[in-house]
Image 1: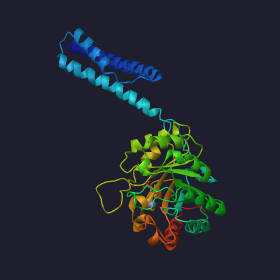
Image 2: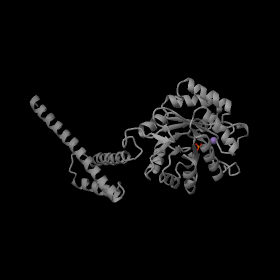
Image 3: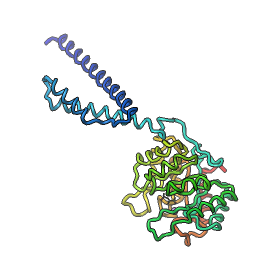
Image 4: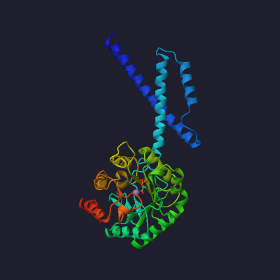
Amino acid sequence: MSNKELDGLRNQLDDVNLQLLHLINQRAELVQEIGRVKEKQGVNRYDPVRERTMLDLIEANHQGPLDLGSIKHIFKEIFKLGLELQKDDQKKTLLVSRKQKSEDTIIDIKGELIGNGIPSFVFGPCAVESYEQTAAVAEVIKAKGLKLMRGGAYKPRTSPYDFQGLGLEGLQILKRVADEYGLAVISEIVSANDIEAAVEHIDVIQIGARNMQNFDLLKAAGAVNKPVLLKRGLAATIEEFIHAAEYIMSQGNGNIILCERGIRTYEKATRNTLDISAVPILKQETHLPVMVDVTHSTGRRDLLLPTAKAALAIGADGVMAEVHPDPSVALSDSAQQMDFKQFDEFYEEIKRLNWVTV
Ligand code: PEP
Ligand code: MN
């Protein structure tokens, strides 16, 4: 065979490759278009019956020289590519996704901006136990020039015999304290029925780890005009966490703060394992602000400061930690809440490292 002949054949092969490339991409475009039509009609994208018909048609028309098994394998791979492309399309349409909105979402909570590049801090007791206890913490928070306070009124406890929180009375105490001290309050709501009471009494609705996939609750919180702090579930993947936020946003409420609070692993040295890399991942994948709860992720007072520093260094928009006037008699989480002296030391160190602008 002359070199000229060989070159000619190679040129033909290149042409065929380019045609295949073109055809595969043309097929992908058609699959995308079909996906859009199906979405409009509300029908499922993957249709196994249709895939069988396509394979049968290919089989009936196959003439060789390649063997049929390999041809079917190649086509199945091409079908798979099409499906993956549709999945990517679905991902792109998530309202919380960075692909949907490239600018950071900034949430205004009574003038405190979350997600504007300056870290915010949420301190307060695990549970609201009384007016006096809550007001005592509020006073210390206010004295530091801070604005945000937390306190649980409905406590999701492992045992039904443990303190369950003061309920509505707890929300009323929070409102009174917020008004008296000029603070904004964050409190967990565990039932969709209590969302209305939350709107009246508090500034941010917290949805806790145990309720991250309580879809009725997520939808109810999404239907009101009140910021939501959504905690990552005990064993939730980042993808599940993002989809939980999507439940809220899909109802119209885009004021969502994501909160990494540790996940359950087989490590027992800490209460949970703080997934610090979740912070930059969530910030890349979504446009929402991301906070880190150092109390529930570690369950250890001695780790609050190091993990808070890590959270801030990795780009968290804020840190949450529990503070109680007398942790040893706290009705919940007594092992890891800070007393006022520890709180002072914690916050002084954060200030010394220039994480605070006030
Ligand atoms: C809380 O913040 O009070 C709480 C119970 O946290 P989590 O839902 O993260 O366990
Ligand atoms: Mn707690």
